[in-house]
Image (cartoon, rainbow, N blue to C red; front, side, top):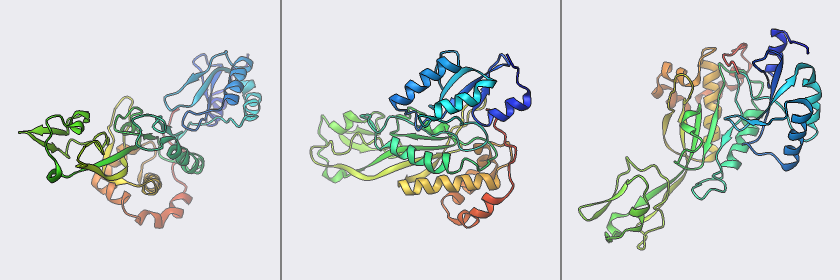
Length: 314
């Protein structure tokens, strides 16, 4: 079997074919939109695994699919084979990575349509910015509620669905068995000296208490998304920095664009997004993020010959 050179390994890695540890075979990383594929695509991948790989189909932490055991000489036939059902490889390099979303669209705890939002982000930023070189990889996560099942705050850009309660204490009868209090999972809403109290510093806006009071003392004040910036896991974990406020979908999309422009302009090659934020200062970065000033330099930033060799190793 042909043993590819290091240059050949590097070339196909940029297309989503990662060298296996035997030095001969590769894993093909197939892109999904939020981990969703059709039944026809699943059949194609099963056939491709048998025909070109080792018969196994695996999944990555970012909801892409990998087929291990491909020979170097089978990369082109494999690519053509999966293309018949609209499947492509990729998801590597110093660029926006495939978007991860939870099942908030159908989950009983979901506060937003995570699949629709993540699909829109996939089209605009994964596909639309695919050729934009960044200092390092950039991961985006969309969570439907504060349960944080897909850990949005450990992504470079994290998005979490929110329902903000408005508590009218004057209307409250301080019922001994208060349904909203019993539903609050973190006891932000609780009893103190026979009175119902909402501690807004504890409340994570899960919305469980909204519209559950018999006397309508708790209604929705706002809904939208909470943002985290600069999160990452790995050898050195950095929790994402929360951005104060609740944002609309359009504001979220705008903030992603501005975050990428700031990262491309002010990040150092090889530097992760969160490390750049720490270097610039979180207040400085968030001030830029919430301003539209960076958009005036958008084309200049995109045209600049920056980060020609980014820091991502996989």
